[in-house]
Length: 171
Image (tube, rainbow, N blue to C red):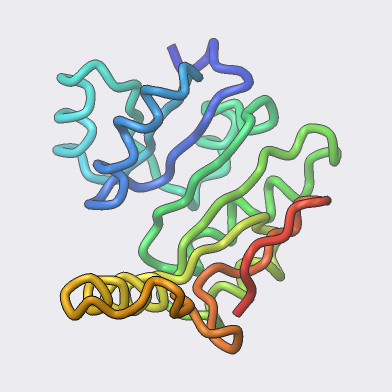
């Protein structure tokens, strides 16, 4: 099934965040494949009918198996920033028109900037997202005015996108 994928989404890592994204990916109507290095995760996903592959993101052969050059998007939920580097290097070696959008998450802003430097298109910063969510809970619990900004202009939780004509919040 993986061999037939094109214009698809590849999700790297399927921990807690990945499990939450599965329903959304199913709703896109696009073909997708999940890659994880935990055989139990692969077995669980396969039983649910999800196209899942056991693999190591440091193995370039995996990129060919996943047909990365024909993918529409790669979503990385890898816990270590450096684990993104091999596939980002591979994607950078592809002709520009064959490069899928690369969406990643990082624990801190500096890691996010490293991912941008390596070629990621869009990066979220988990620690800032968490703080922003807690702020929202406090506003809800204590009835703090909705006109109060959710994020200060000096500390936003999503790094800017490198996608032309799209601007996202910047750290």
